[in-house]
Image (tube, rainbow, N blue to C red):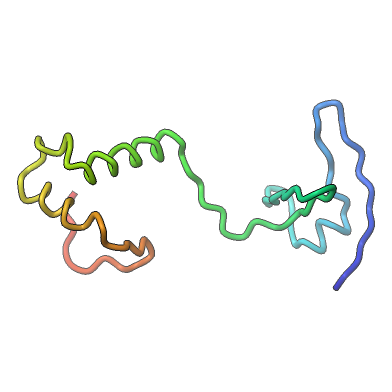
Length: 106
């Protein structure tokens, strides 16, 4: 395991510059993303490879919609066949990376 010891200075805005050897070891350049994990008295810095952006407004809306679907509430204005289809799939696992088969109408 590669061991590198570098020191960075915290600015008045709480910012640091990752020292070049650390950036090189992580394989990050300008615009690259790193994640920080705090454990005990250590901070672990890792390169972010598959960052999923989550919009809090959309996440909240989807959580509310999911709850309504599970409870069978507020879905009555939907066409009956769509509402039944949604209710039938509540307990099924969903693979968001699965290819869509068939035609999709938006």
